[in-house]
Image (cartoon, rainbow, N blue to C red; front, top):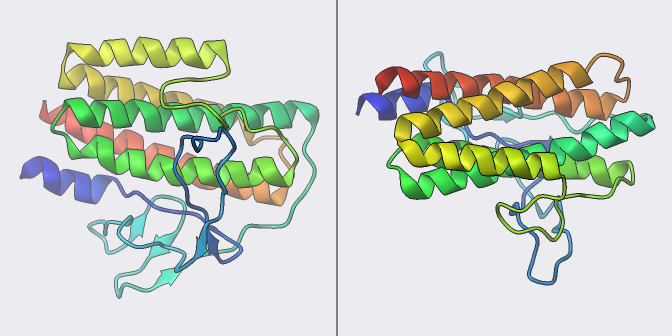
Length: 227
């Protein structure tokens, strides 16, 4: 019960409203191998069932805001800008990193009775959808398209996933620490990518992903402290 209370106050699985359209869709590609759509249907920016209210009355994953009265405020995706070749490469890498987080947490959710993994995996699905929206806007090939769970185009990402998955075999505490490592890596990558980034939409998404990663790390820290 203590853990369930902590997860409800330390992590939320938020969504990103893109121009009033909720970016949704599974992380893996369809059976035909094509990339899944990044925007499937129109709905409330906060989305149903994903946000959990924090102790001070707001459910916030950095990708939307739910107020104490249950209403939502969501900002549409900002205007398109310009990305350098290096920034496009970074954007493609962000997609693989979000998929890594989703796939790893989903695998751990199947092994351990710890709600934190399923909650954050749901959030990572939305995060990847947001990154895919940027990939589409800037005509960058989606490196996650056609790849099933646990399979990555970048050998370095693949090696990281395999290593963290193996570390998680050693018990719940090890899996939680692997999750914290993922969030630490995401925070470092996003912090490095933001300076010099001028495209308003990319800055908006990266900033929200950074806020979400910080909250996810906080959630893992709470669970690790309980172990």
